[in-house]
Structure formats: structure tokens, C-alpha cells
Image 1 (tube, helix red, strand yellow):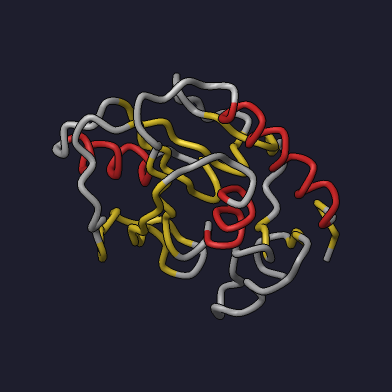
Image 2 (cartoon, one colour):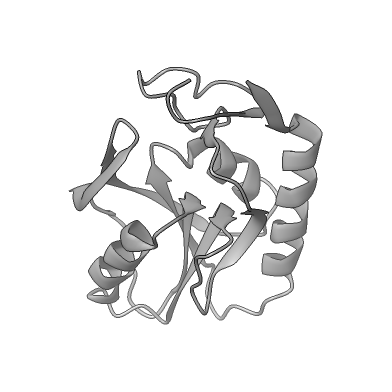
Length: 167
């Protein structure tokens, strides 16, 4: 096990992301949508630092253990999103499959904009509107701060540790 990101490093990066969002002009309070389950800690800490906003939750499942599979939307948003700026908050932008599926799903709501925000993105992944915190250059599986181990535990850690697949 390797500690990849300390609690302080995570909180400093979240402040940078919040500052970027707070500089943007919105005609209406923006909507922040948390992608459950992995983004819940990042989402909570981020929305505490932004101005007036609405919040909602969506649940998508794209992993079975540590293997990525088809994206399934298990719970959708309940807020009215028409003509609103939406920030879609997820944990990691890896292949982009989850974010792309969720943006497609939410675009049916006639939003003003949908901006994905992730705490992490893989170095090889890109999305034109993505706001991200850290760029990952290795293949450690990350655990903690909302991210779970293959047995569903350790989401409650305040830091993030990395393990090699098979550890």
C-alpha cells in the first residue's frame, strides 16, 4: 500500500476547483450532481466551498469489482434541469464511459450546460469540458476518500492509497 494523496493535498485541490467554479457567471444557481457512490466525499467537500447552488444525486454503475463493464444508470436526478448550468461530479475520469453516458442521459433535460468535474483523470483520457484535480500517471487502484476496495470497504478513509492490481 502506498499513500498516493494526503487529506491536505486533496483539500487543497478541491479549493482550487471551487475557486475556478466560483469565478464563472451563472444566470441561475447552478446544479451540482453527485455520481454515487465514489464521488460522495469529493462532492460534499466541493459544494461546501461554492456559492449558492442546488444539489442532486445520480447513481451509475460501471464496475464489477475492479473490472469495467456496461454503464447502468440506477438512480436518476429528481431536480428540474431545464436551462440550468449543471456540474456533474464524479471520482475518476478513466475511459470516459460513465461520464459520456451520464451526459447523454442528462442532455435530454435541456440543460444550459453540463460540465463534468472529477477529482482524478487518467493521463490518457480527455474530455473537452472536463475540470479535474489530479492527473494519474500510473495504474494503481485507488482506495479511500469515497473510492472502495474490491470488497466494497475503505471508502471512509480521509486520504487515498494506491494498490497494485492483485494486492
